[in-house]
Structures are given as C-alpha cells and as structure tokens.
Image (cartoon, rainbow, N blue to C red; front, side, top):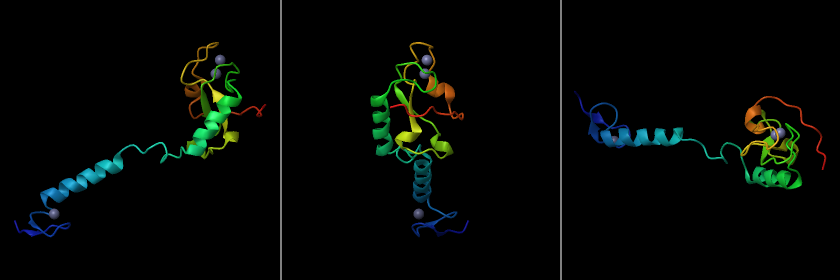
Length: 121
Ligand SMILES: [Zn+2]
Ligand SMILES: [Zn+2]
Ligand SMILES: [Zn+2]
C-alpha cells in the first residue's frame, strides 16, 4: 500500500492518518460527547441564587400545596424555553418526598405543562 503523509502531522503512513493522530482524534471526539456541565446546560449562578431565594420565601409546594418543599421547580421547563428568573421558579418536593402525600412532586411532574398559582409572597 502506498504510504502518504498523515493529514495531521505529515508523517508517512498508510491510510489518511498515522496511529497517534487517529488516537488523538478519537479522544477529542470522546471529550466532545461527554455530558455538558450544569452551566453549559443553561443553569447559571442566577438560577442558583433565585432557587435559594424562592425556597427562602416559601416551602409550600406549588404542585401539591403542602409544606416542606426542598427544590425550586421550573414552571416552564428549561427545555421549553423557561428562564432562570424567580418568576419561573416555584417551591416543589423533589429531593425528599412530600411528608403529607409522599410524592416527589418535581420528578412526578417531569416536563409536563402546568399552570402556576400567582406568587403569593
Ligand atoms: Zn499523524
Ligand atoms: Zn409537593
Ligand atoms: Zn404533598
């Protein structure tokens, strides 16, 4: 087989790239496939601050109406264009199930559409 210069490093090789360059490109693709960080998915420090503020203001779950919410749920999910603003966040049971009805309301709702009650406080 004719040896031709590697596309990446010009070393003579069979095929289009030498072994080290093929491996390096494989590693780059592997990195690109890796799960994006929370920040890259659209979760920002603004979101974190608003999440904390929403839970500090109220622990009444907006989905079941009971006390003890431990997560801030996105009213309009991020995947549907929801924002990180406090107006798009409501307290919801999620990390621990609701002590009254036993449901992890945030997970139970998933990405389903839901109508939020007005912000009461
Ligand atoms: Zn090469
Ligand atoms: Zn709940
Ligand atoms: Zn409940």
